[in-house]
Image 1 (spheres, rainbow, N blue to C red):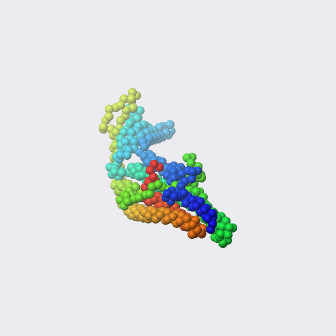
Image 2 (cartoon, rainbow, N blue to C red; image 1 turned 60 degrees about the horizontal axis):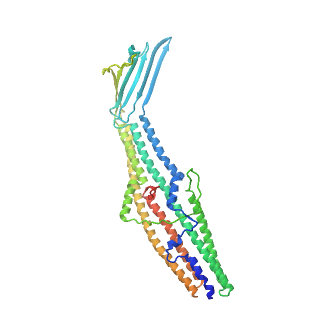
Image 3 (tube, one colour; image 1 turned 90 degrees about the horizontal axis):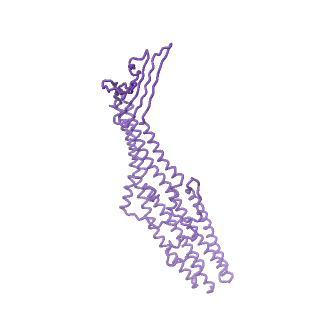
Length: 487
């Protein structure tokens, strides 16, 4: 080959290596064009956690929990009651009975109550009789205290405790939902990352193959190469074009998939900015055995699935104590102090402790079969949930260990793959120099370039896989927001 026809190989060398002299393969491959805007995984997470419908839906769980607590506290609201009953027949008032009261329900095992009665009539039941000194009106105040069932706990207090635990349950569910959303988003981001840089590599391969084909045709016309050589060069160029189109399709589809996570502040779908480009993470996760053990210990306490099971056990314990309470007999003490303060001058009569109403209410099932069965059912559910939590904890710890093993293995492979890329670049450079000296040909250059492109593509895919595994590790450990602070 003539010297003049080989001089262009140095231009080709500069195009292939992309000014990589003195730079690492990472500097060469991940160099961002001047017109592009960096779109990091951190930027992506911020948009996802703020505006994605699933994230917003998870935020509603806190409001649901607040309303559950509000609903349970409603059982302790003061209650006003009014009863009025009258009978008239043949122009005669048989009786007129009025009773107005306010009951102050309490979280303690007693219910204070105050009220006013006004009873009169010719045929009034004697037990309702009130003297006419103050217009048949009488004031009473007292309380009801359970001495048996309901003293330790009751339905109202159990419902309130269940609602408070439900709030903790929804917090764990929120973490689980957001973490899963971020994991899915991370997978799609790193797929987009790989498809973008793979497309850039394929573009580079097409440019070089096209130039080799053009030079080969020129050499054929000058009689320096056989016509069949141009056919081989064209096949290589066409193959690179096919790879480029496949890479472009994957890149477009990855962008479409990524855009499903992009929403604006008013809940409308947003488009992926065409100027955005992904970039690799700057830090490599290096975790010692002690740090891995600490991560596993934190997962045992804070993993959302394990927390939900722990809270479920606490809820079941509330149900167990309530079921045990129903084994006791019902024995309620009622005491009401009576007075008639309603004189025309609103003078308050001196309290008389001898004026009162007192009563006891007692009831108890003779066999307690329903109550004992309910308690046994709750205990069985507790045992089943304990088994479930033990299994879930084992699965979580094993998942952390397995993901960590994959992460460390991938890190080692990445290091070796990066070294391979550097060596392939040296081989290609040497092949080009041999070609310039007349000791090689364009087909060998194409082969070396193919090896380099394959190595770079695999390297980019390994980097994407590594970041996926890193996100998977934090997801497996149940770390809030996959360890991303400030979201």
